[in-house]
Length: 123
Image (cartoon, rainbow, N blue to C red; front, side, top):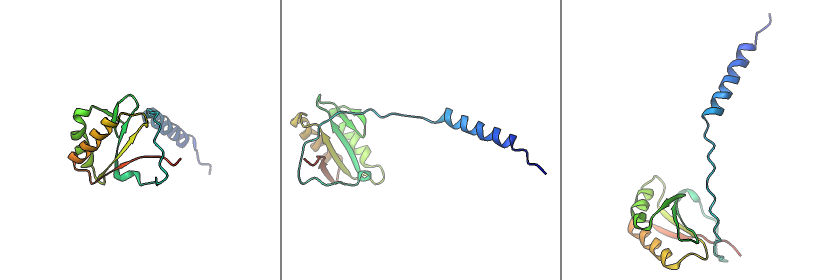
């Protein structure tokens, strides 16, 4: 008795084509920032943090989405209500505006963040 594998191979190829056509291959935008250096920096778990990125040109991103400074408190309040998120991490370029960084810290406090960390890298 010979088992005919042709229908099985056809189904496997159809499934392969289906998954290839429906898969979303999203490439995230890479933002080039130069983190400030600190010898006391240590790695932390990312899943608990809402990341606020401050670019050198003053643009704000909350977990990768562009946000205006006027809406930052509300966006952070919504992001902090996600399950497991209770901290804010400020990730800013060393050339970024210090005044804007202070405004981000203030917005994080108003949004109810338990703590705020400033991301750095070891020298």
